[in-house]
Every structure is written in structure tokens, then in C-alpha cells.
Length: 211
Ligand SMILES: [Zn+2]
Image (tube, rainbow, N blue to C red; front, side):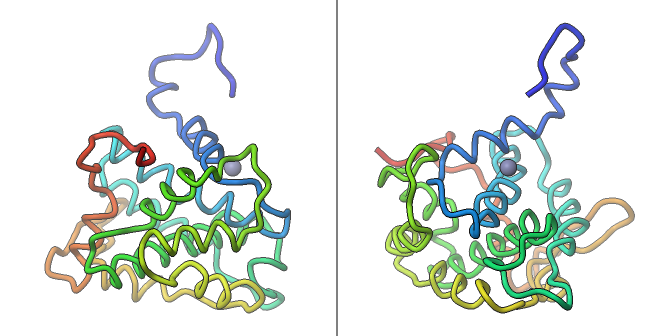
């Protein structure tokens, strides 16, 4: 992090890196083949956390997701997330995994739980960056917390196969519609309630692991 006399208030208000790096601390260290989950989580959760804390508007981050998520699409030489270590697949392929997982957990829990519930459980079980864990251990703890098999199943589907994500279909289902440089929301879309829940501030008002 660069912080010094020339740092302005605006620089701090606009900063995303500090949030990104802090998110890394809240997940165990996994083998290098799984860097995509570490970077994908930080990439996906960072803007959502900043909306939940009131620093960004939801429209802004969904517009960014619409713009940036395709950078994670597999290319012709792709061999799945564990075997393809390009920048796009690591950051945005990982973020695609997280977005899909969030939506699927919410679909399977009638929108009562999401990816953050899985992540809180992993931290509560001691899964922080100073611990070396097998990736499957973290995913299984997350799944137990949500009462689903979303994380492990999605991992098995994406780890060694170039599984494309239908982003265009997903935006439509979530009710995210491009509008110039920004987006507008269709609250009558089939998954509009899930989209709203993804950026809702937790009732505690803070994003902390359960005690
Ligand atoms: Zn990172």
C-alpha cells in the first residue's frame, strides 16, 4: 500500500486495494494451483463489502461486474481453473466462480444465505491466511454452513474443465440492464431479490464472523 504526504482524501475514498488485501486475510492459504479462489474472492467480495459499508452504490459495482467479468472467460487452451494460471482466469475466472456460487447458494436457501455466510464460517473455523489448508477443507466448511453442496460441486465442475459461465443470461435473470456507462435494475426479473440481497448490509451492520 502506498500512503504518504501526497495521498489525498480522494485517493483514500476511491481506494479498493486495502479492502482487497484485507479480504485475503480472511481465507486460508491454499496451494498455488488454487490462487484463483484467493484472488477471485478478493475481487468479488471487495466491491460488495464497500457497498455494504455505504462507500459505493450497487449500480456502480454491477456495472463494473458487467464490464469486467467477461475477462474471466476461458480461452481455447483452457484446462480449468486449477490448471490455467493466466491473469484473467485467476482474478476474473475466480470472481465468476464466486458470483455463481453466491447466486446458487441463494437459490438453494430461498435467499436466506449467500457466499458471505460460507466465508464467515470458514473464518470462524480458523481459516485465515496464516493457516495452510487444502482447498476442499475450506469449501466443505462453507457448504456445511449453508446446508448446501454448492462450493464443492462447483469446484468439481470448474477445476479441470473450461466451463463457461453464461454471464449474459445471468445479468438478465438478476435484472441488471446496461444503461449507457451505468446499469439500471429490473426489479421484476426472476432473480431480482437475490441481486438485492447480495449487496444488502447484514443486520448486524458490520461484516464480522459469527462469535
Ligand atoms: Zn489479491
